[in-house]
Length: 506
Length: 79
Image (cartoon, rainbow over all chains, first blue to last red; front, side):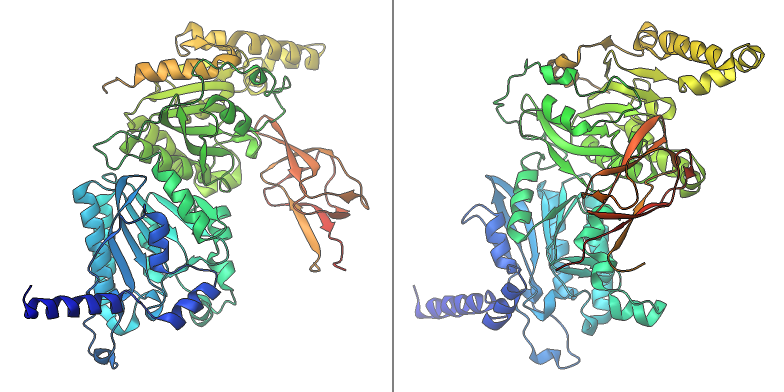
């Protein structure tokens, strides 16, 4: 090697080393004291050892004003590159809070944009780790314009590759729309916040006293806004769960999700399934108990568990095949379809449909929630979104009616008319246009009024209605139900019909 | 409302079918205090915190709106 080359290489390596120090030792200590890992530590945890290949380490901000020309901001506050997770390649960006609070400047944004475009072109999942004070005010339009380019690039990648956001510190202002446009969003309890405006700006503009927690803690986004798919206890937990999530996802729209050789028996019948649904049709039960018993043991990965609890969504495996589970939970709001559950369901169904993940729908639904509040909240407008997502989906879809399946709920939870390839009913199923008491009040109004004993007449008519029209043999007689099955056989039946439906062409 | 009081609110519109506690009773967190009927189901309404039932604001048969306060629970003072 020539002396000249040796010198040049040494200089580059020296610069590389310096840039990799980020904001330096003191800033790193501060980051740790806040209970947070650094951007590079996070990448190391996410990626298999030695697989991370960085790009744009040498990115340099163009700021000339405010004395910025004298300042060096290593990597411009965000680390980008390729890595592997369980041997599968991903694209990663990780904001570095130790460098001017990870603020979003023009070059910072350009790096993230490049990562998004790379992910889309190469067909690789995008994993973004946000930890940023927001837009870098000194860069003005440079930052604002780059936000726009980032949103545009993310929208183009939507449905092409999975996009996952990890909120591991603050995300403030317009930048919050970047993680919000991704497919999955995980937050870390206590250390992460997400809002359009923090306490000082809120006070100045709308005169409200609000804490950062009130505006956008991880709790708020898990329970109220429904943006957080999973709240992690710390950075380590968050990254571990994302590695697990990736094990269910294909790398791009061109692939099917990774198959895992199952340990569970596909023919496993479960006696317990006979006793979970109460005999009294007015008594609720927890649908989780059913789900855990029918999917491959331990494979259920619930998403948004604390938001719109009346609808359970999550990924699981059936004999090794990745499926999306959409299930009513009668334990909450009677399992009704609500504005929030419909928005939760819509996003999940659309994701599964985009990425070749079959849908398993478990119905126990009394219908769409009615009443003044629900109507004014826009239950028709929003309720149509889940219905339409199902109607548009072309992945294999299998529905089981466990108990209630009334009115719009029958359709909104994917009946055969809406697209289910198979629909099975348990003997406890109640499938009808309307509930028996309501129907009898209309159909036999005159007879009941004229009766010597109106209560007795009404009760008799209600029982008849249950036997003749609500019982699943009625819907099965009309071929809306493919078969009425033994609850113990739910898993074997699902697996067999899934294997058949996998080959469907829509 | 003082700091150590917590409201048990109706999760949705519905009819109070049963009240399972009395004023002055001790309840645990997640214990069912009211059963509300709506949408063809009798749903349990649980105490979000443990403590003493300070006040019951509804009677059986009452129709309540979503977010209506049903019961007020007073938490034990921290020692």
